[in-house]
Image (cartoon, rainbow over all chains, first blue to last red; front, top):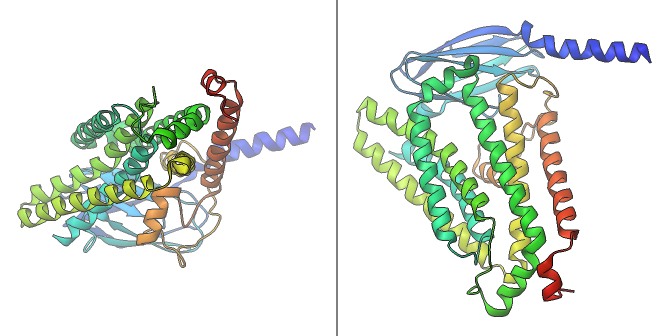
Length: 108
Length: 277
């Protein structure tokens, strides 16, 4: 019984601790394009992407694959949390300028 | 122009489907036009305010303000839809009986119109704030703004037309069955919203459990395709759901069913009087 409780507590701590190890990545929106257009992230981990919108206009970081919809106002930064991801390619776009703002997250 | 039309239409459509269902569900309620108009108006004003403070909202709560706001709005809508269905479980049968007996002209007494007006307001607020920000971006850049704004206006018109289509499609259902249909639609709508809400909480970093993806049906029925989008709004279809999303979806349906069953079984003074069954 005691071992079970201990295991549960450790599991809970593990769950709570996980975000502390989340890796951080940076992405810039400039002239309605993402820089870089490809980000390589570790599979199976939670990852934080800081998106800095240097344009004057708002943009929406949108990806059904990554399950993210986040508006980033002009001249500001937004934090996008993703994962844990299976290995693979996950496309994202800037919904307000979908013809130019495109990118992909590669989980490996 | 086409890009603006598509984006605006998409957002108006999502709110419009919800408004169409709410209007069908409130068929025959006195003054419901005013309630729904008030909901839309409040939603539009709210969308403008949210767009205006988008920067401050995004920065709030260590960068999670937007996700928390979305989760709160969706959660509130889920509660309102539950309230509506619980109320209908108690009074729906008498309503349907009255309506098929004397037509929809009978004023069906007090209805939970506040709940439905709030749902309409929240739907317009969520989708509308995106439209406002998008159109602001167009105006700010200044390039061929008139053509893009025309596209936006056409998008709104197309969205409104689709709302009307949803509504007239639903009210063509015989009066005996319409409330059963709208109750089921509202339950599924609420379940889908709950699944979206927990995903926003996950994105906000509030919830860290059950984040594993259950399946990927994006190859067969992509969520960003036309049918996928409609199903996403209507029944909460998600092509890559997480365990948490499925749990929230099923949990909401179960809670809704349990509430409907409990409230529907409780003795209702109206039912005793009209001696249904």
